Image: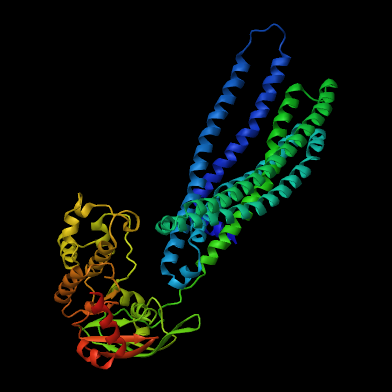
Length: 575
């Protein structure tokens, strides 16, 4: 429950919150004292003989109201800083917690969850929780305290008028709660539409090249226009509900004032009530309407906040498919990798079946096969991004489950085919995850990846900002930067998952030569459609329909593997 969460957090800063609510109470009391001062000043003025030049007491009343106004301003400033400030800290902590948790989740979660939904949770839902922690708590406390305190002041002033005054208040409260529930339902619909719009924008940005290539700009604009119109219509309905609620409350409040004017006016005429007391009572009447209206608003805020809190908690309750066992130890890999009878399937469809391979420490190994043969899945299994349904993966003669996931990934430099770069400088992208790396080490890694010369031709060289996802660079340049980023980690194992597919043949030869010189003693696994990437490899594994069809050196496979020989012949003809 959201309320339990709020109290558990505020308990940690109880002294601050005490001062915050103390100042809020002080503001309310000052507001309730003000009508009494006005009452006395009016009664004093009326009691004076006319004409009269005695302004001394009138000046006192004026200065007293002025002092109260300053006090209210100061106290209001501090309770806002304290209470609303703490609500922002709650939002910050909650966002950080969610962000950190998202980083721990496996790829299967992101495969089934829309980016727009995640973004909606990080923005709209977080905002709803913060509003509940700030305005919800403040308005809830203030409404209860102010209602009781105002009622006491009104009863002390005139019991009969108070009884007349409270008759419409339950109706105002009922109207507020009724309309707020309607607002809550409509708000959920608005939030879902907003999430869909966010997802649509994300898809457009990611697929802009495809959209433009297929001349679908107008079609996509129309689709977004439909979503936008739906979003506007939902918001207009929301405004209509608000627009109906407040005029109804205003009408009831005015009727209430008319009744008080009639009854109170009669009491003034009969000298049962002074003019100042009637004016003060009207002031209290204006004050007490707020708590009645606030009941609905607070209910709405907490309902929205609680719904958002539950949605966020659903994300936080998600567990990664891959987790360390309690007895897992942190061990640095040396580079020896063995698969024994490994099987892996996606959604019941077998991708890798009965895989038995051994990659020895320091070997330069190639993996080839047709599209869909399971090459990338093999790389992801080594990296422990996914785990086998059966069989054993053994690192340095130790069962993979006995080694912490972080230790495995820290020891591996992985370069995927889909090169991802952050919208930062080239230097920062290469240094990613290795903040202590020197500038000289970055240059050396880029030279090995055969990208240094291209970087030096740029205006800002290593300080060049590459744009979102490296949009300012070519596909081959992005792949080489990602290779440099993997090299900078000084890993025990390097995996190139079709990571040179966008590089021309001559550049590829240079990179492979540099990589072989650099990676002596480092286990290097090159997954590629191009046999030229690993033609001189110590061992090559040929995959076919999820099985290891054959293995050996290039010369051996030319003789004994029809699949390998076929791929090689086709590539020779293409050259």
